[in-house]
View 1 (cartoon, helix red, strand yellow):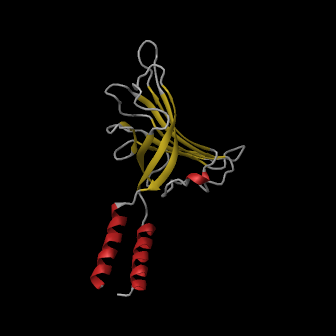
View 2 (cartoon, one colour; view 1 turned 135 degrees about the vertical axis):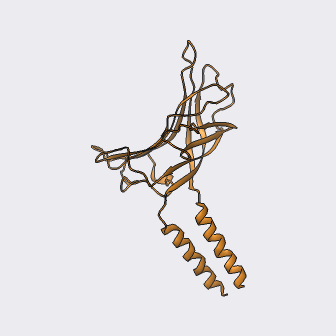
View 3 (cartoon, helix red, strand yellow; view 1 turned 90 degrees about the horizontal axis):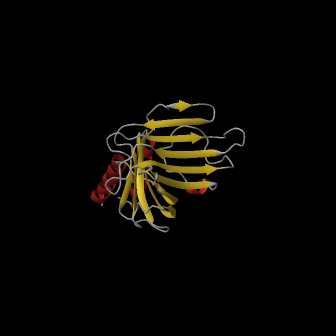
Length: 216
C-alpha cells in the first residue's frame, strides 16, 4: 500500500473517532506549586514552593446542568469515575472515591465586564497523611477579554491555557484542625492541560496501524 494511502486511511480513522459524540472526558494536567501557607507545619515540610504536580480530572459531557442562567452554567458530578486527583511530591490530593462532588462552572461574557471563567472545584475529598481533611480543591481560569469561551456547553477538549491569560490558579486548602483551627493553603500554576485519548480512539488508531502494516 502506498504511503499516501496509509496516511489518508489513518487520518480518516482520526476523523471518525473525533466525530463520535464524547461522553467521559479526562484531562491530564501538570503544574508547579507557587506558594505554601502552613504555619502549623501540618504537611511536615513535604511540599514547598517549586514542587511539581501531576494529575487529572474526569467529567461527563452527557449530563444536564445543575444550575444555569444567562451567563453561567454549573455541572455537578457525584459518582465514579468523576473527580480530580493531584500528586504533589507523592502526596495525593483527590476527590473522595465513594462520594465525589466535582463541579465545573463555565461563565461566558459575564455581566457587566464581559469576562469568561472556567472553574473546577472538588468539595468531597479524601484525607491525606492519614487524618488531614481537605476542604476544597479549586482550579480557576479567567479571561478578562471574554474570548476564551464561545458558549456554556461542556468542552470536549482540554482548556487552551494561552487563552486564559488573566487567571490560572489551583488552590488547595485543608479543614481547620484542633483548638487552634490550624490549616494549610497551597497554590499552584498549571503549565499543561491535555486531553487523554479514550480507549475507542486508541483502538481505532491501533487498528489503522495494523492494517497498514499488513497491507505492506
